[in-house]
Length: 164
Image 1 (tube, rainbow, N blue to C red):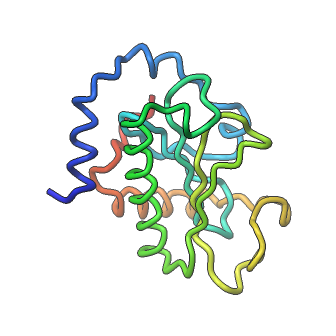
Image 2: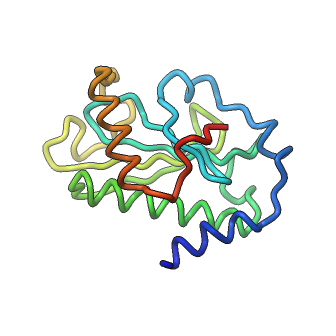
Image 3: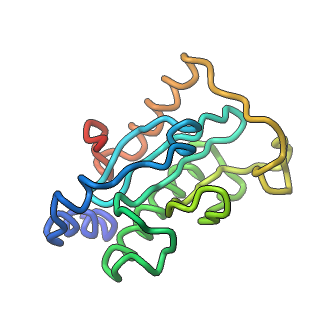
């Protein structure tokens, strides 16, 4: 078992109760701009509906959080492991020159962590993707392909049937 897999399997024994995640509600802006792909015990994994950039977002299923330091230390570590797994998939699968990772929260206050695969020559390179231009949504077949790619690459890190 890899160190990352050990952290993920240990999370199931951490003792967070169902009631913590049952009161979680995804911000309406995130809901409108993304597709839910999967979930872990801690986070929901979203795909930004923007076809020009492979772009995944982790949202901890903890109500009322807006800052990383508001997670308990164990969950902060777990979120970092999830973030590393997502970043590695973006780098390896999409041959990213650089994976941009950020938790801004100026527009959507709910704690969420963006992971964007970037390459020289992409439409916003080398600047930020935020505010560059209007979003270009995936066509249905492209969205299905992206779901399958991410599902295969992340394997058992996330449960693709648990979208709570």
